[in-house]
Length: 122
Image (cartoon, rainbow, N blue to C red; front, top):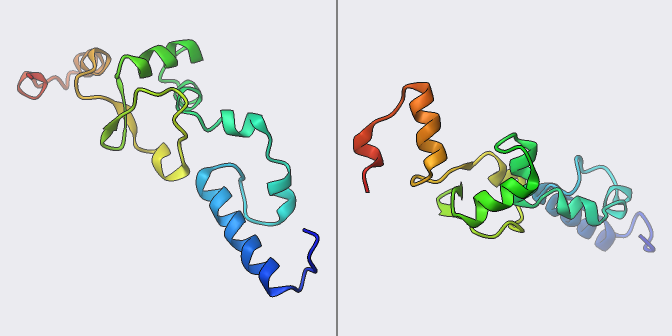
Protein backbone atom coordinates (compact mmCIF):
# COMPACT_ATOMS: atom_id res chain seq x y z
CA UNK A 1 0.00 0.00 0.00
CA UNK A 2 3.01 2.27 0.41
CA UNK A 3 3.91 2.06 -3.27
CA UNK A 4 2.43 4.53 -5.75
CA UNK A 5 -0.94 3.49 -7.14
CA UNK A 6 0.46 3.66 -10.67
CA UNK A 7 3.37 1.30 -9.89
CA UNK A 8 3.15 -1.79 -12.14
CA UNK A 9 4.45 -4.13 -9.42
CA UNK A 10 1.81 -2.88 -6.97
CA UNK A 11 -0.98 -3.30 -9.52
CA UNK A 12 0.10 -6.85 -10.37
CA UNK A 13 0.58 -8.00 -6.77
CA UNK A 14 -2.62 -6.30 -5.61
CA UNK A 15 -4.59 -8.16 -8.26
CA UNK A 16 -2.96 -11.49 -7.31
CA UNK A 17 -3.56 -10.94 -3.58
CA UNK A 18 -7.18 -9.92 -3.99
CA UNK A 19 -7.84 -12.87 -6.31
CA UNK A 20 -6.35 -15.34 -3.81
CA UNK A 21 -8.22 -13.83 -0.84
CA UNK A 22 -11.46 -14.00 -2.82
CA UNK A 23 -10.91 -17.64 -3.84
CA UNK A 24 -10.26 -18.66 -0.24
CA UNK A 25 -13.35 -16.74 0.86
CA UNK A 26 -11.75 -14.12 3.10
CA UNK A 27 -13.20 -11.18 1.14
CA UNK A 28 -16.52 -10.77 -0.67
CA UNK A 29 -15.29 -8.74 -3.63
CA UNK A 30 -12.03 -7.81 -5.31
CA UNK A 31 -12.26 -4.03 -5.19
CA UNK A 32 -9.35 -2.68 -3.15
CA UNK A 33 -6.61 -3.40 -0.66
CA UNK A 34 -8.82 -1.93 2.08
CA UNK A 35 -10.79 -5.19 1.94
CA UNK A 36 -7.59 -7.16 2.55
CA UNK A 37 -6.62 -4.84 5.38
CA UNK A 38 -9.87 -5.55 7.23
CA UNK A 39 -9.29 -9.32 7.48
CA UNK A 40 -9.19 -10.45 11.09
CA UNK A 41 -8.98 -13.65 13.09
CA UNK A 42 -12.75 -14.11 12.97
CA UNK A 43 -12.57 -14.20 9.16
CA UNK A 44 -10.27 -17.22 9.35
CA UNK A 45 -12.53 -18.91 11.90
CA UNK A 46 -15.57 -18.47 9.64
CA UNK A 47 -13.83 -20.50 6.91
CA UNK A 48 -13.27 -23.54 9.15
CA UNK A 49 -15.23 -26.68 8.31
CA UNK A 50 -16.99 -26.84 11.69
CA UNK A 51 -18.37 -23.32 11.29
CA UNK A 52 -19.42 -23.92 7.67
CA UNK A 53 -21.38 -27.03 8.75
CA UNK A 54 -23.13 -25.00 11.46
CA UNK A 55 -23.84 -22.13 9.07
CA UNK A 56 -25.29 -24.49 6.45
CA UNK A 57 -27.48 -26.16 9.09
CA UNK A 58 -25.90 -29.61 8.98
CA UNK A 59 -26.03 -29.50 12.80
CA UNK A 60 -27.39 -27.45 15.69
CA UNK A 61 -24.09 -26.27 17.18
CA UNK A 62 -20.42 -25.94 16.37
CA UNK A 63 -19.65 -28.49 19.08
CA UNK A 64 -21.89 -31.00 17.32
CA UNK A 65 -20.18 -30.18 14.01
CA UNK A 66 -16.79 -30.90 15.57
CA UNK A 67 -18.09 -34.25 16.81
CA UNK A 68 -19.41 -35.21 13.35
CA UNK A 69 -16.11 -34.26 11.73
CA UNK A 70 -13.99 -36.16 14.25
CA UNK A 71 -16.19 -39.25 13.78
CA UNK A 72 -15.49 -39.15 10.04
CA UNK A 73 -19.05 -38.45 8.99
CA UNK A 74 -18.25 -35.46 6.76
CA UNK A 75 -16.77 -35.54 3.29
CA UNK A 76 -15.40 -32.56 1.35
CA UNK A 77 -15.15 -33.47 -2.29
CA UNK A 78 -13.92 -37.07 -2.34
CA UNK A 79 -12.01 -36.92 0.96
CA UNK A 80 -13.39 -37.70 4.41
CA UNK A 81 -12.16 -34.92 6.70
CA UNK A 82 -11.31 -35.59 10.37
CA UNK A 83 -9.92 -32.13 11.21
CA UNK A 84 -12.49 -29.53 12.37
CA UNK A 85 -9.99 -26.76 11.54
CA UNK A 86 -9.93 -27.71 7.83
CA UNK A 87 -10.12 -24.49 5.78
CA UNK A 88 -12.95 -24.56 3.26
CA UNK A 89 -12.42 -22.48 0.12
CA UNK A 90 -15.23 -21.09 -2.01
CA UNK A 91 -14.70 -23.85 -4.56
CA UNK A 92 -15.02 -26.60 -1.94
CA UNK A 93 -17.97 -25.10 -0.07
CA UNK A 94 -20.51 -26.64 -2.46
CA UNK A 95 -18.91 -30.10 -2.18
CA UNK A 96 -19.55 -30.74 1.53
CA UNK A 97 -21.65 -33.87 2.08
CA UNK A 98 -22.13 -36.72 4.49
CA UNK A 99 -19.64 -39.55 4.03
CA UNK A 100 -20.88 -42.74 2.40
CA UNK A 101 -20.67 -44.73 5.65
CA UNK A 102 -22.44 -42.09 7.74
CA UNK A 103 -25.45 -43.27 9.73
CA UNK A 104 -26.87 -39.76 9.45
CA UNK A 105 -26.81 -40.02 5.66
CA UNK A 106 -28.66 -43.34 5.89
CA UNK A 107 -31.32 -41.83 8.18
CA UNK A 108 -31.81 -38.90 5.79
CA UNK A 109 -32.15 -41.29 2.87
CA UNK A 110 -34.67 -43.42 4.83
CA UNK A 111 -36.67 -40.31 5.66
CA UNK A 112 -36.72 -39.22 2.02
CA UNK A 113 -37.49 -42.74 0.81
CA UNK A 114 -34.27 -42.93 -1.20
CA UNK A 115 -32.66 -45.89 0.55
CA UNK A 116 -31.01 -48.41 -1.71
CA UNK A 117 -29.71 -51.16 0.56
CA UNK A 118 -27.33 -52.37 -2.13
CA UNK A 119 -25.37 -49.06 -2.10
CA UNK A 120 -25.08 -48.96 1.69
CA UNK A 121 -23.65 -52.46 2.11
CA UNK A 122 -19.92 -52.45 2.88
